[in-house]
Image (cartoon, rainbow, N blue to C red; front, top):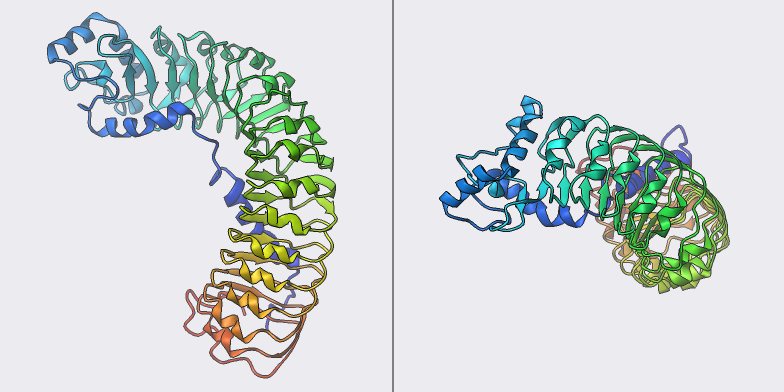
Length: 512
């Protein structure tokens, strides 16, 4: 019959697509740590100021005589010009700081002063200017601003180590150095008591996270993601009373997760793509404000403690895929009414999917593939109107495909391959007009392919091979003009192949 001659296995066909989806979903390409308050509040003004030099950021216009007086009688402008001069010549022209065009430094792009009457520099936001050079050679000029509160040099090309001077630099409470080429270890001196936001993500940093992080009692945001950090996470880190946003993902961190204090304030916890091990601590449930928990691609094992989810009533995103978790999915998880994305694939979980899944009424992504799940797909899944991605492949699911699946009107991908699913393909499934991927191969499906399949006008991939389908190929399949992959091999189909299959398809039927 039709299909690839080499008999592609389920894993070979499904794995690349799923990995591509997962990378788009959880990797740095789509999922990004929340921007700090400084980045969010100044980005628009910064972009405007690069093109309209005469437009002030936070300083109201003063008479031109006052501008000249300010620039000539305080050192702030000189410090800024010294900083620019310390950069390579290729970077100097990227900072259009000019006394003749804008006599007051408070009007210069990226510079914010306290007020018209107080021209001391309050914040310096040079994010995304394309600046380069060794940061340690220039930072002293920045630290000459004695009342500076915020420094944003993110998304540039600075190299060298993180200057120790930053730890004793003015009154800095916000330091954003993410997305550069900084190397070396994190200096302990950078963790000062006044620090509120620190982002060192997406650099080339190595070594351990200094235990001096415990000194930052006011820290709210810490980003150390996408580096080469190793060692254990300091236990004191999770006890910081005001810490809300913690991004440690994509490093080489090891060890176990410490206990979380009863006063845990963390909202975003990203620890995926490390080498963390052990069990998930029961005390994670103390983080009652937790909305995002990404712990994929680690070595966590044991059962998922049911007590965790009793406290996590605000949880929206739970990613525990590609670990070594075992046992049943806790019943308490299905009571999370705010849950939008649940990804537990690539573990050793057993048990069944309960009807209670309908209580997760906001669920949009459900991935439980590559586990040891049994039982039937619950009919209550049809009540999840926001569901757009379902992957239950590579389990031992039995029973028939419930007709109620056809009520999931938002569904775009349905991956059920490599199970023990029986019965017929319900005609109700053909109501899924938004469906693009339908994989049901390597099951025990019998009966005819529904004639109504032609209603699935957005279908791109249809893989039904290695089942027990009978009858003729329905003519409705010729109406699938977006189809690029079709495999019906290793069934008991009879009759001729409709001559119109693949004709006038865009971009064309790549595999038949």
